[in-house]
Length: 143
Image (cartoon, rainbow, N blue to C red):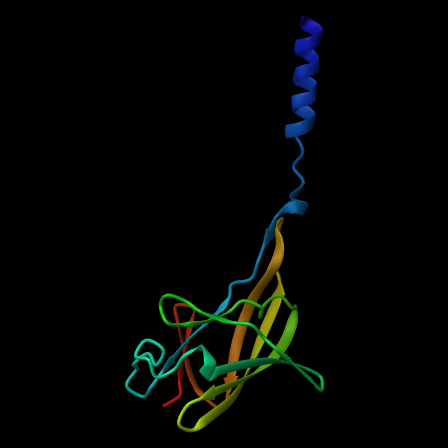
C-alpha cells in the first residue's frame, strides 16, 4: 500500500510540476474601427454603411491580399488579422460612400516579452483620412 501511495505521489509530481510556458500564447488585439460622419454619428449604426461598403487589402510587395473583417454588435468594423505579422504591415481600405474613400493604414507589431508568447500591436498609423484613437477604437471620419 505504501508503494502504491508513493508511486501515485511521484506520478502526480511529475505530471503537475512541469512549468513549461511554451503552450502559453497571447494573440494580438484586433483593430476596431468606427466609421463616422463629421458630426460623430456612427454610419453603420444609422444604416448608411453596411458590410458591402468596405474592402480591406493587405499590401505585400506588389501583391494585394483581401483581408477578412466583421461588423460587431456595436456597429464597428473588426479586423482580426493585423498584428499577427511582426514588423510593419500596410493595408489599403476602400469605403464605398457617396465619394469613394481610399486610405492606407500601417500596423506595427512586435513580439511580446516575457514567459508567454504572442504578438502585440505597437501602433497603427493612418494616411489620407481623418482618424482618432480613443480607448483602442479608431474613429474614421468618412463624411
